[in-house]
Image 1 (cartoon, one colour):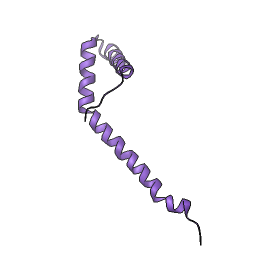
Image 2: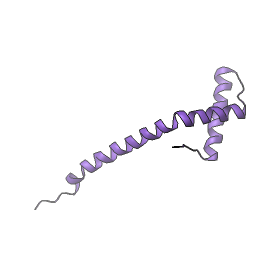
Image 3: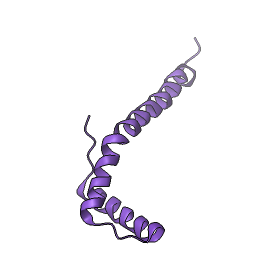
Length: 76
């Protein structure tokens, strides 16, 4: 699965990366290098984060489904 970000999110993330390198490492990060780092993060972390989010949603929905009978049960 390929994880993609909107253009606005890409620009924002690259801006944050450049600020981090400037502030923490006293180094200017070029647009090219920021783009390469973003690509690496998306390829390596993206699928794991996505899968974790899916599992979190599944667990949350399962709790709601397990409680459904108690919420809608009507005594005879």
